[in-house]
Image 1 (cartoon, rainbow, N blue to C red):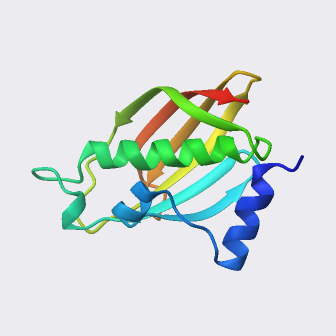
Image 2 (image 1 turned 60 degrees about the vertical axis):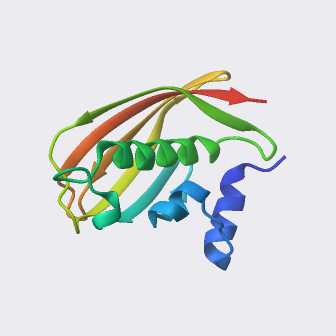
Length: 139
């Protein structure tokens, strides 16, 4: 059975990728996928704001989606996954209008549990936040 990576790559190449509804709602875009890797980009605006800076829940959501996608690229078509634990460290405030790039990579893909990380940066690589996730593979 083929890996989901092949499907993601075909969808992105053909322009037929349908984003998760939450990513569509936030206006985030899946930019690329590789084996155990995914990049999601979010140009922030007023809708993403907390009282002063981009809301931490928005950053968690983007990180979670990027980490899930990175792990899915290693799974077979028909397999799925769910996040069982997520931790994020906010290192620098994200101002309105900034572009957030979420680069996720699988650290260890286990048969049942996997560890994935995500670095949330600006386009120049300045770190806003770092997240890790434990994911459960559903076969």
